[in-house]
Image (cartoon, rainbow, N blue to C red; front, side, top):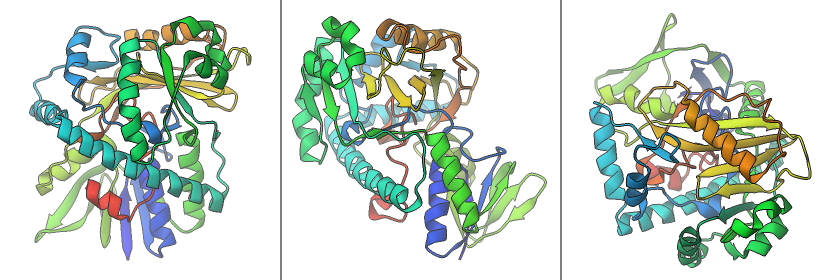
Length: 389
């Protein structure tokens, strides 16, 4: 069977790999000149299964109201005259109900555990190197109320297979000595030893290379205009300047642009773009830099060590498909990083990555989860994925 995969991010490339391994002829269409150049380009690099909780939770509305009007807020909601934004917002609120939140958390953890296991199998079979680090992920809390809330959910998360363990401030510093400078401000932490980190961009490009060696055909610079349908069936994909690309089956993995493409087909996806930001800088002082991946829960920032680079990512801006850079949000990331880890990185060499429209299914939406990690990326053709469809 011939399969056309639309999108060459980590999801599309992983789908192409598994489809080719299953014996299918695969073509990947993407508008960028190489794989992994948009949402997968510079995320936070966390494979964080043990904290797979949706941002749509019973306490979300109060936080959103508190953050209104703050340009540097962890979640910035810019109201627009966009019916899709309002519909998505209403559905988001519905997912904050306790019953829905519990159901969504169960599904996220199940999918995350499977995805992480699949990733490890793939790495073992291919030997891909992507600055992976298996030292766990530590969430630290500088607000007592947030730590107490995390403590209340820790037992429930462990029943789902999460290895989340609560830590005292001293234990947090023992896990990551770079936190010693702010020991007095830490209320506590939660640590998951099984979680890990890595560079999604490196992973995606390395896997794309292996896909090409296996016979997957990549058509880069392919601007997809529409999905053509005849008689209730997909008849092909129209690509600018290339006509119609036909296949027997199609995989849509275009992130937040997917709803626009499938809406004319009568398919409604509960996905709305969230714009995230990240900073990458070289290590300046190894003794001051973190080596265990961290999450600052109070500011919704993640810190990953990618070889000799430091990656900081976070915040989500619900501003439609606007990809312009919001300088206050950039400065907020750098300010918090320098405040927590003075001297760790060379802030003079921090190319701010161009923000991009990111996507989240409704039940998965959270600021850190605006594709700042790759935990739910791998393992196509499974019952769990069909449940999420």
